[in-house]
Length: 246
Image 1: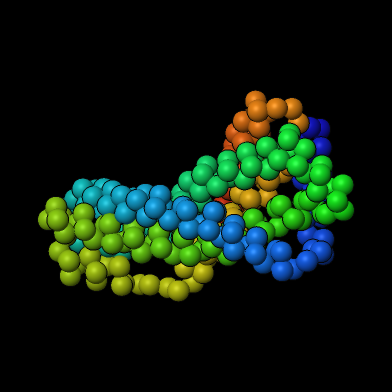
Image 2: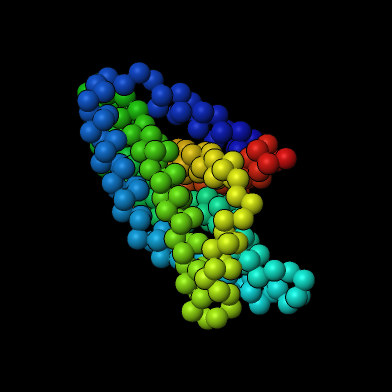
């Protein structure tokens, strides 16, 4: 019953979030601020993780292909498919869930316990829309660019690892990443990314918005936002994979 209670309150918050904003100019300005905070500030961690993920994938694939019947270009092909279909959209989204989700929950939670949200309500401002909507829209806009960057850097990281260790030639790796490419795989990954962006921002904001107490409760809200967002991402990943690839 507690799950149904929180789910219902979450839907009620979303209804409040997507009401008609009062001044679009304020929202546009806040949208750009959130793009920088939620997206551009995460570029470095996405880049580092993506390069090393691609490198590890390439090395593992090379050591697991021990049959002469399997062409070496399979290493490049498998690295590309793994990065595009799963590692970039899902793993990077889980990383962003920890970084971005905790930031959103703690920021809004702090505003709740310090009564800043109450002050917005007293002034007649829709606090849920004002605080949460720009974050949702910014994440849904900027996350796909981060994921595309992750795909490219992962493939590059695999190329560097494969060629420097002598596990595969540069020609063989590049031929592998070009083989059997379908643009639908990229659209599938970006579709998942947009859904994950909505999940991360909305669930984290929900836990922050309904925080009560003090600093300890803000920390608990931040933790809960990350945990439940991660669970929702894994669950929705299964559903989207079945719907889009079955």
